[in-house]
Structures are given as C-alpha cells and as structure tokens.
Length: 354
Image 1 (tube, rainbow, N blue to C red):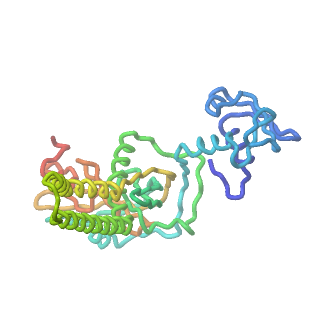
Image 2: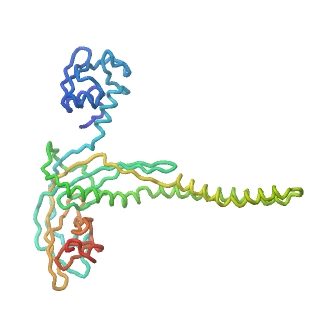
Image 3: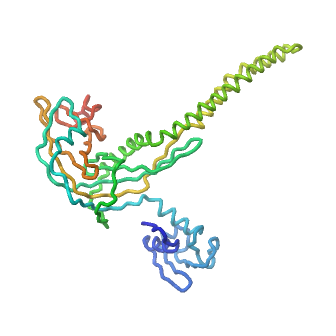
C-alpha cells in the first residue's frame, strides 16, 4: 500500500481502513467506520467509531482524529510499515542481444583448466527479485542508508547491487505475480542476502569505519598521555621529604593500579567506538523480463558438461551461476566427477555426492 506524496492523512487512513476490510461512509462532519473484529483489536478501538475532522488528536470521546500526531493515525502508519511492501512489474526491451556471447562469458565466468563454446542462444522470460535494504551502522555516531540487491529468482543467483537503472525502461505493473513461491529457494536467497550485504557494506561504510578508528586511536593516545603524566607526577611525589612509610606504600600501591585502570579505560573506548550494523529489508519488487538463455558446452579433459547461462540485458553481462553444494553465487566454476557445478570450496568434497 502506497502513501502518495501530497496525500492527506485522512485520505491515507481511509484507504488503509478499506484495504483492511473496514466499511467507511462519509457524513457531513467526517466518517463512520465499521471495523472487522481483528482490526479493532489491533487498533485498540471499538468496532464502530466516528472520525471527526475537527476532533482533537488526544480526545476520542466525540470522534477520533486522523490529523498528524493523533494516536490512531500513528498506529495505522506503524501497521502499514510493519510489512515489507512488495510490487511487481514486467519489463520490455526494443532490442535484445543475439550474438557475441562467447566473449561475454570469457569476461564474466572462469572455467579453470577447461575450454567452452556456445552451442545455442534463445530468448527467455526470467523472474527477478529486487530488494531494497535499509542499514544502520551505530557507534559513537551513526550512519544509515540504502543498498539494493538483485537476484535471479529462477536460479537464485545474486546478479548485482549496482549500476542497474530502471529509468526509461518500458514497464507494466502487475496486480499479481506469476511466480511459484518456493520456501527453499527463498531461504537460499535470504542466506545470500546476508552474505552479500556484509560484503557490500564493507565498502559502503569504510569512511565511517575509518572515522571511528581515528577517533579511537586519538582517545587512546590521550588516555596514555594522561596516565603517563599521572604516573610521573605520583612518582615525583614519592621524593618529597617527610613522607611516612605508610603514605609511601599507599601511593606505590596506587601507582601499581594505574596500568589496570588504563586497560579498563581502553576497553571502554573500544566498546564506545565498536560498530554494530543492522540491515532490514524495506521494499521488494518482483520483475519479469526478457533475457537470453545461452547453452554453453565446457570440456575439461575427457569430461564434457553443458550448462545454461543467462544474459541480462539490464546489466549487459552474463550472470553468475549457483554452486550446487552451498548455494553461493559464483563466477569461477568447477565440477566434480558427476558433473555437479561447484565453487572452489565445495569441489574438494562435493556435498551433492556426499
């Protein structure tokens, strides 16, 4: 459900209520609303309520308000944002590449100790899942932003998170998604999301991380300077004439505790400048679009294997393939003796063969 720019809070709220199965009727002073029992429990309101355009946000006796700041509107907004919005569209292209795939495959996919050749290429329709994720990196300060991930839903391969622009592409939005929901496939994609966001955020927050490291080193240097000066001052104090042995022993004990105290202060600084990262999906889109399915034959010694590769017209490249063992997206491809497509880790002991 969308909240259009410029839409009034009342219009959004009425659309939301109707979308949730409520019956809404306009009257001269506002609206009369009949809520389903489950919705009234979630909103903590009676099943029947009046919405008064002139009501105070904090006064629900004479009618509920739906202006900014009203508790009822805040609950609706929180509930609308609790689920990741999902849309669907179909893309079309005026031109689709029909040759030159040998060069592209050599550029994007490696087959160590093997040679390959394109056997055929045919137009296909491929489904993709685009996921926008919000990240929040927190330390002494915080940094937040968005990252985008593309997955080939048919193969589960991670396509890219960069340089994909849908602007200007002819598209048709779908009321329903012509996809088979596969929990196993989605679990593999979720695992790949975790792996890819970790790698992408490493570069995304590098300046933020460097800033925290600089501040940590600066504060540690200041601490060491302070405790060094404190130790020198306390040791000089021991040279004053007239000090009793008891005072000398007490002061030496305090000097001996300084290293442990400095260590604890450093640990506190380390916790202060450590970075925690939270990543949360905030929007998703299923995309159906024309691609080219390329049948590629690979020969390694006496072993011959054919595999299907996908040319993506948006990225203008050959997509990675998926390891049969661990499910990771890979661009360096190996096989076991039984022709299972594997990554460098899994080829040592093929998980498929057991």
